[in-house]
Structure formats: structure tokens, C-alpha cells
Length: 224
Image (cartoon, rainbow, N blue to C red; front, top):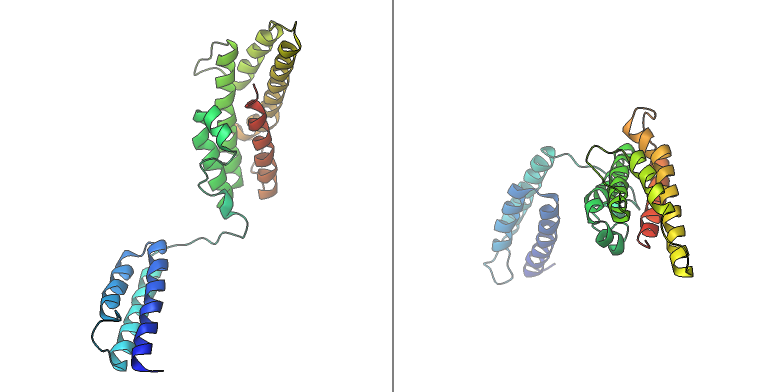
């Protein structure tokens, strides 16, 4: 390979390496590469093979030193799609229940990092924010001390007083009744087990099941 072709190839490899170094957040190593890139610009001075070999060896050594100071976690295929997703359950859920948004996002990130119990914990916090919001919407006086069960219990009394003379009113009342029943069930089965030591931990399969069910539930609550 001609000398200019070698330098050009070195520039290409270093540029690519610099991109990944930036993603890995190894700042010192990135600075080392950027200095080398200045020397290997196509319009730069001629570089002999000894200089090239020296620079590559130095960069390899620095890369090893940098990586030794960091810890990285392997994320299995299929999980990154849940990481740091602002609208994990869809934009409509995020807009309808803004106070649930942060916990739903965190639930996805915990699932990605294989922390299933933490994932379920944040899901329950997110759904509880929806419980409080819907309780206020139907006229329940919600205080910071009120439990999930107390809110859904008070919602039941409010739902019974909703008008149901027209088909539209009856449909809305049925939706409220269904939402209240689902939320009460979630509170008994998942929320209580998560917030109290009834369950030591959740498996990834259980967390995925609860995550999927929570998505369906939260989307259905948007219809009220």
C-alpha cells in the first residue's frame, strides 16, 4: 500500500475510533486521538512508518489505561429499546399523566439494566400518580397521606353518583367503573407486594409481564 494511502487509512480508522471513544466517555483518550488526527490529516505533513507505529502503540496503551478506570455493563439484545425512553408508554400517556412520566421512563431504564424489582417499583409509582390524578378528576379530595386503596375506595362512591341516562353517560360511567376496578386490583396484587416485603424480588420475566400490563392499563386510562 502506498504511503499516502496508509496515512489516509490511519486517518479513517482514528476518526472512527474517536467517535466510539466519545461514546465511551474516555476524555483523555479522546484528546490523544484528536492530536493524532491533526497529524494525519490528508493535507498534513508526510508521516513515516516509524512515527505511525509509535502513535498507534501509544494510543492502544492509553486506551487500555482509560478502559481500566471504567466499568461497563453488557446489555442483552432487545433491551436497549426500553432505555431512557421519555414516552415508553406512548406520547398520549405522557401528556395525560405528566407526573407519571419520570417513573415510567425510569422503569424502562431499570428493565434495560436488568433490575426487575426496581422496574416494578417505578411502575407502581407511575400508576399511583395516575390514581391520584384520576381521583382528583372525579372529585376525591386527595392528600399526600392517602393510600392507593383509600383513593380507589372513595372513587367508587363518586362513580356510583355519575349520571347514566344517555348512552354516552353510561359508557363513561362504565369506563370509570372499569378503571377503578383495574386500579384497585393492581394496588392489591402488585403495588402492595412491591412496596412491602411480601415478594423478595421480581424476575425479568415477571417485570416484563407487569411492564406490558401497565402499558395497556395506562393507555386505557387515557380514555377517561
